[in-house]
Amino acid sequence: MTLVVHRPGLLTTVQDLGRWGHQSSGVPVGGPMDWFAHRLANLVVGNASDAAVLEITVMGPTLECETAARIAITGAPFVIRVNGSPRESPLMVEAGAGTIIEFGECLAGARGYLAVRGGIDVPVVLGSRSTDLRARFGGFEGRPLQAGDRVRVGTTTAPVAERHAGTGGGMPRVRQLPPMGSVPARGTVAPLRVPEGSDMPDTRNALRIPDLATPELPREPGTCLEHPPAIGPGPQGSVAAASGASAAGSAGAG
Image 1 (cartoon, one colour):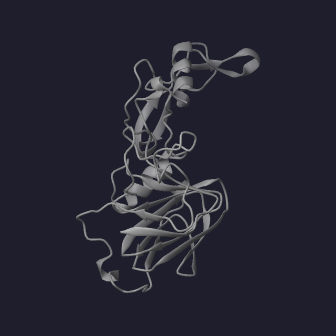
Image 2 (cartoon, rainbow, N blue to C red):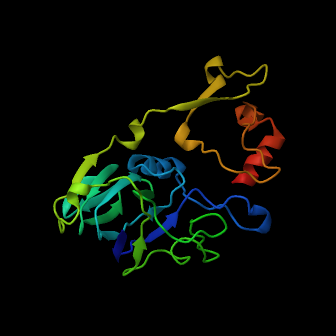
Image 3 (cartoon, rainbow, N blue to C red):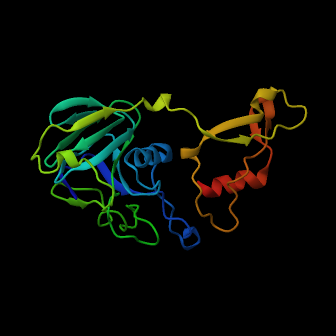
């Protein structure tokens, strides 16, 4: 399966969950700006959470599906037309051969994500398919998409949109997904350590974090991302991190 790029948009790149394990050699992690939206798009189409998707910034592309495909669009809301019909993201499209998906401007935020069943199929570089624009490697030839590019999609054994195969541009099925803000928070409870004497109420002792926002990823030796810093009142009522080690670990991770 191939996506044909008719219009590239302002900045459309291939991103997976990043290039971990090479920071000590000066290679940044990279990956998506919005991990939650990235993983949600993959979840909707049945991909692994770390599959490569298209990250779309501010002004989106116009893409054509050469064959039937299942596609999910999440993240920031864009003006979208599917075969000329206006739609609202987030959504899932059971696309037929010849389906045209056209992105306009972003209505809020900055970045949206388009996942295709099977994942975007580009070469793996240093363990990742993410685009590193500064170093010019990874993703689609180390650069943003351009008009005329043909983006390959990986294969999957599961049947996808079989009823649309060979329809030559028949009307795709579009399913509206719940707004991003209404997605239930499902996941673990991460404790916030509140020092004695703090005026923070007991109800602040736990923070629920969605599973999709907390992927289990390899870490560089010496980094500390698992333990949030203690939080307490700082000078003149400001909130300050009481754990220097944890704060330093978080800064290094960013």
